[in-house]
Length: 306
Image 1 (cartoon, rainbow, N blue to C red):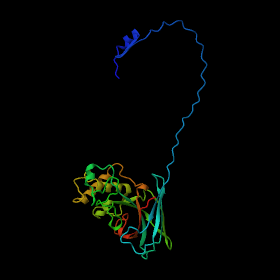
Image 2 (cartoon, one colour):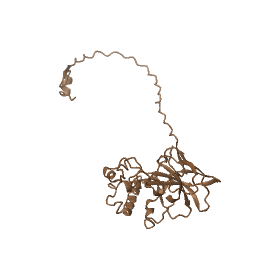
Image 3 (cartoon, rainbow, N blue to C red):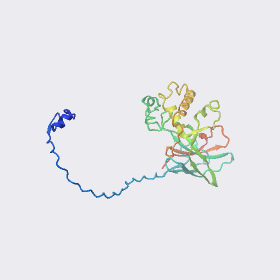
Image 4 (tube, rainbow, N blue to C red):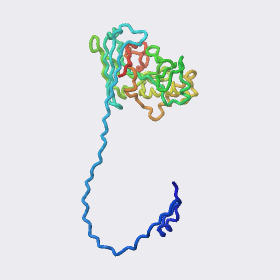
């Protein structure tokens, strides 16, 4: 509450302090008498400094994710892998490199020496929660009109996600490496997921050699995720003059250029961002980018992340 005071010097002289609400009368102090001798005080004992207790910082806990591989959900099912299956495990500390361990059984060795099974970690992109209303309104809704809600897996047609050869999702694929045959019925891989191999295919590679001379050029996986998100899910706020339907190549090139020139363009997907794992049979000599799995060659897939 505000208060109104009289002039401070006059109030102190009269021994009164005025406010807009009350008046307090103060008795003037008595005249000082003769000073009394004061004995010198003994020096004070030094006070021991007690260090403040520090709150212990908990060490980050190791994370572990396991994907179970099987031929289920792959249409058409590849021959000779009906009994195949395995597991892929990612383990490590958040923000650091992760160990990738894969064990696959029941996968018959391929007779062609240039064919080898390759492991992929797949991140299915979701609709961001912070999309502008104009962007959200333009996303495909599918037959039921309820698809592509914030937080759901994004699909290019607005319908339920499908995987394999006819996938309708946007996925960022990272390959830790090819599996090695450890026996007559066993294939294994132990690798480290770090910035050296946490790379994904360059989106411009899909436009052919005229857009990108080397189709094996890679970008950090998180950067690719940002490019694909802006390309497909931000049509109203990112280059709205270039639509997916009529100016797809120009829109893709413009979005790539925009993302790569922004601060924080170099970004990698963390281990918990990967939603699935897959094994494909890839040729050593390929006509597609090295970091783009061949959907037609998919033989095992899994998404039961524990």
